[in-house]
Image 1 (cartoon, rainbow, N blue to C red):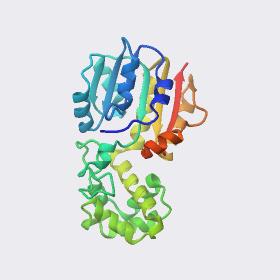
Image 2 (image 1 turned 60 degrees about the vertical axis):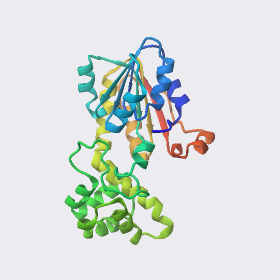
Image 3 (image 1 turned 45 degrees about the vertical axis):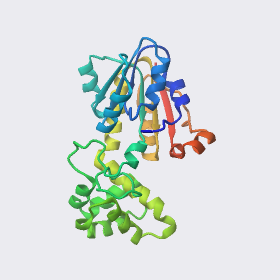
Length: 282
């Protein structure tokens, strides 16, 4: 399976409110998309993803005239929608997590549990890999990346050992070994998560793209249209929460983020950190 979708019932309950034009900004393997298609009668869905593997998978899985599949980044949502001749949407979904396919595919560099090139690009057309970023950054810049995007209190120590060995870092395991050398055993897994997250966010400009994408989504939202966002760490969730509060004429439907049920967390451990927020344009 490409990816097991998170909080499917909650997503559909908040997003769907009758036939219309819907947008999945992070279509992945089409998990949420398939359920939305099942609800839709005469409407239309646009599915966007920046990962070419996801686009290829979607085109093989779905042959539905109501569905338009587009390779692109949601930071270019306005331009992509104009190209499709769409002036507004009735529902827009952002599911910001990595797919199982991205994590488990050797060679993508997203996981510290699989050895392979230190790439981390969601879209292979991006100019810099994580390896390139590490080699070109100063020690201070590396520390800022780990502190800002990984929220690790030992960013300075970690940045120093990475910078000192930057020319020898080629693979995920190269980076992993350096982090393990300077981290107590009981903190290693958490630190590895933070550092790999930090470099992935930096390589893909994830937080800047999220801000642009959310603002574009709001501008393209029809009256009574809904936006649903699933985030997986506090940096993303904070942006979503603040954007929802800042938009005029926008009502937040989730005073607190919706979390997966205990049953879902047991069945799908990757859902444990998921937080869903939803709102509608008045």
